Image (cartoon, rainbow, N blue to C red; front, side, top):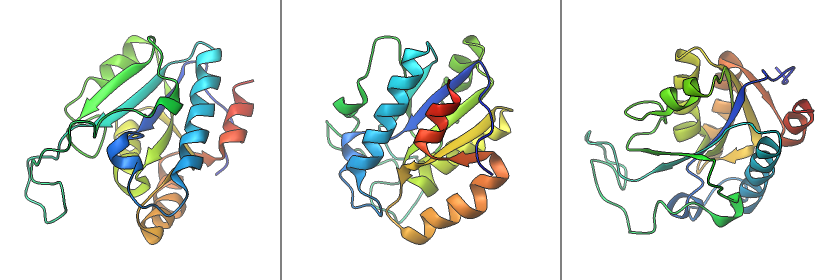
Length: 184
């Protein structure tokens, strides 16, 4: 369902737009995803709305066959946020150790302190960090909107499944331009 409205206290949450993730091969050009995320961030900042930049610093401690999992450590610059996002002092930076940005972090506390009732999400990977964070936001009672052109995945089918099957059950989906238009 296309985005229809944004609450007065909406936050932008960009997931894993960091050096170690944006360097991976993705379905859609990473540069375009980052550019759209940066435009969303600029629009939210211009209106005095919270911008949350989420980064992952280590794999979850559970066993996994995936590269980098099982509590493995990443290179030193892995979690460096892309300078294109224009990180500002007022932005909230959340550091996570699992796929979703709510589990084991202070994200919910940070949002509630700011009176946030809705989140707009984007980032990489659609089916992992973004979807897990969207599910967490929904479970925490936030209205969820997903900027589907400000996200990508390493797997085309996984991206499609999240965008077409999962996200419409969690909230509204739309383009970066449409969401910026709703900011007024």
